[in-house]
Image 1 (cartoon, rainbow, N blue to C red):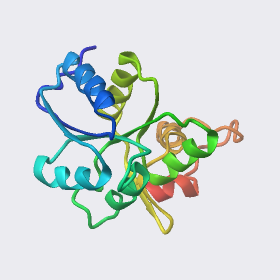
Image 2: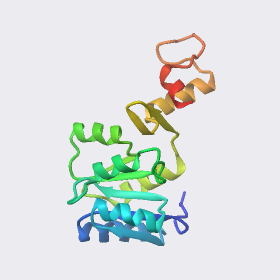
Image 3: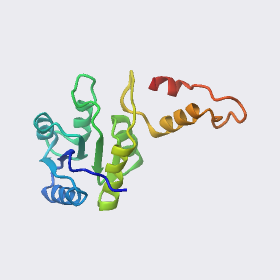
Image 4: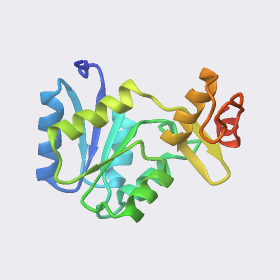
Length: 178
């Protein structure tokens, strides 16, 4: 299935002009027409106010304000872009980074080197499989996939794992989703 990206605005926040060119070229190849670029998190925040993007793609490691700090600033309830889908790009894919990205409220993580297929899959995921947001005392961001999947099972009436034969019951995690 082909996505129509022509009506969406993308914000690319990446300190490497070369990587911005690669990302922009790929997005244009997918049909995106409105692509705004910024070279660090601080200019990315300014660009958000001007461009009103639909999807944010940003690098993790950048000068001035890195991607993690930018996400922390965005994922506050008083930020008008708190619910924007975020795709984080990084060359550092250690388990600790993946856990940190999830804790920050990133929708998708994309490892460098980037392939067009991987970028398209991440963009498609945030568009075609939107996630509800969760607010707890320690987290504000998209519902983790495993919670969303458990909620779908619960809503279907199927027994949840570990409760074979028992009627599905709402867990504390699905209660948090509301």
